[in-house]
Image (cartoon, rainbow, N blue to C red):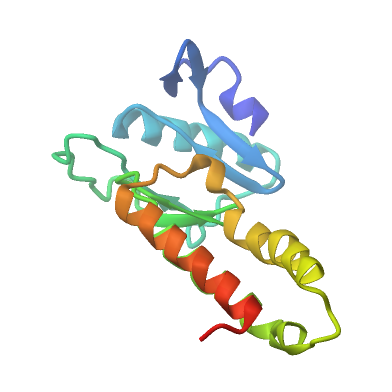
Length: 175
């Protein structure tokens, strides 16, 4: 991947920094300003990969077009699946910048964790202070994973506030 992006003039500019890719372990996200640039970058990556005996798994490779105007129609020139959102490093990323699906997904995961801890919430020998620490460390950490990148709307904030109250009521066994 490093060789693919060496001396590559494409990518997107964030602030004053040019970004061509984001990598973590074996997950890679390529960034391009337009479709022709993305096609060229993928061709380059495929060429360099073949030299090393590697190939791109097209069934795992997705293309997501982010266009503020909403006028850009993605084509299948890349011969890859075009998606509106995808999971990357455990977070759902959407092409419209909305976090609504991710917030709902995280609430669902966290509610499941809260429910699984029901035996602890019912145990009268465990203090409220200890239960509070458990909620903050075990439960809220599940919800807040990746939250640093969320752009929340007021409806998302209300949903999160309601969910937090649900957690405290569940912990305290208040119907």
